Length: 344
Ligand code: ASP
Image (tube, rainbow, N blue to C red; front, side, top):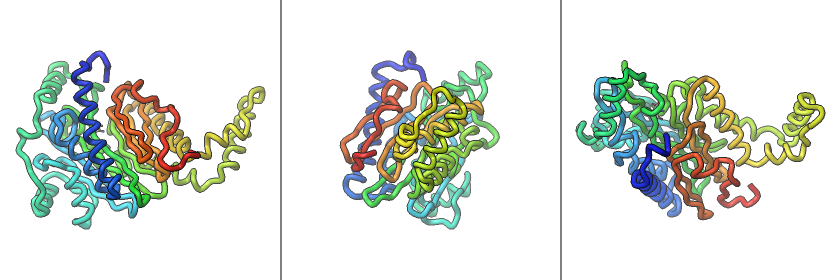
């Protein structure tokens, strides 16, 4: 994602689309709606927009088709729904939610998923709805240059949303066309619960975008949530003392004092940011790239990404409302976003 490849007009178009998605989700939450409804309300306009790699505007497979993946998870009870390889469903996120609520399964694929969608009365669309010129050209370019399906500029644009509602419930959802030129029924992380999407009221809600193979291997979304859940069970002072001791062994001349460590391990927002960054570092160490959006039960909305940019936005009841694309748009290490907990 390079700034020099983005015109001011295109940038404004993306920002407007992000803002529309953010507004749609925020409105539901402000009116007392559920996090599950907010996540879907935010994802639908992005699936319907040709700008993103989901629904309309999805990337093409090697065979020149748009095969869509989506997943959704409810942090209240960890119920989940996911679909992969669907080609006719206008809003795959709605189908994922129907799988969650109306089927005994969690994960459906291809024709079977479409048959189920028909039974549920979901709206369908022909190939012309999903196809866009730009994505077709990406596939042609890839074939001409004999690039791999994993070539870096051919994969981003997956959409996702995470939300915390007024009742304290979390939800996460993700929708994608996958990667340009994907073959052999390749499935990425986006529809895999635990990799691209995870929500658990005890820890956080996460939605991911990036090089799916690596996100699957690390189990990114669940790994972050699990680390947070376990971290919360520990006594922050004991953790700070342990870290300080370890630091003084590693560097006896310049040890880190317990109080400053305590500050960095004891607030939910720092804990969330640190754990998300550590998991994204693991993705990077293995050779992958991408990013995540995350919300905590305390209402902190954070990002972590190891790319030059990530389409993103966040809004809170305390009045934060922002969208950004490039890394410098919002500094991920900027002062924490607050909802109603001024001490965090
Ligand atoms: N994670 C998606 C996949 O691997 C691609 C993306 O995020 O753009 O299918």
